Length: 88
Image 1 (cartoon, helix red, strand yellow):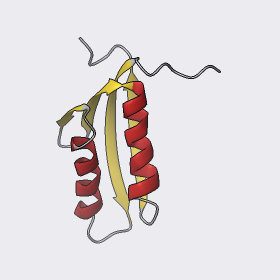
Image 2 (cartoon, one colour):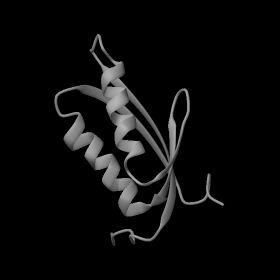
Image 3 (cartoon, helix red, strand yellow):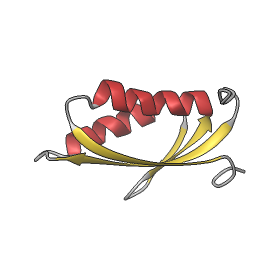
């Protein structure tokens, strides 16, 4: 399967759920800080965050969350991608 071009704009809805931690807000706040510093457009909601931007930056952020931030914590991260919904 060919790689997705860098310039494709996507909309993404992300929900992050830390597992088995008494202080669940710390990992959530660290994920939100990565999202805010990503350069992607974002809208933080009560149950998920919507991100919009180029596919390379979006997948890079998801990789950073999974590889850098959370190797020591259990989590579930639900990601919904669209190349139509949430885009003008």
